[in-house]
Amino acid sequence: MKAARALLRWSQNDLAEASGISAPTIKRLESQTGPMGGREDTVSAIRAALETAGVEFIPENGGGAGVRLRK
Image (cartoon, rainbow, N blue to C red; front, side, top):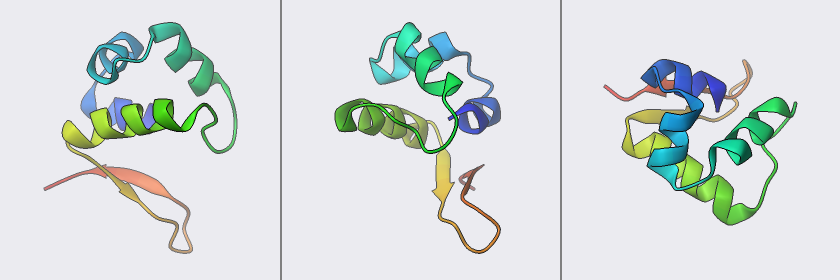
């Protein structure tokens, strides 16, 4: 999530506004290590906001999962 925000040059507040998820929740989720936790609807809302803004999630392909901007 942090990498996706960085690609968009979004703050946690920007992501909170775009996703409808509270800024404290964004902060809490980003502070955790490993796969993103949280409720499924929360994760879906965050992912949808990032994808709508142009982020593409890349599955693990031997080099690890990642993100990039769509062309």
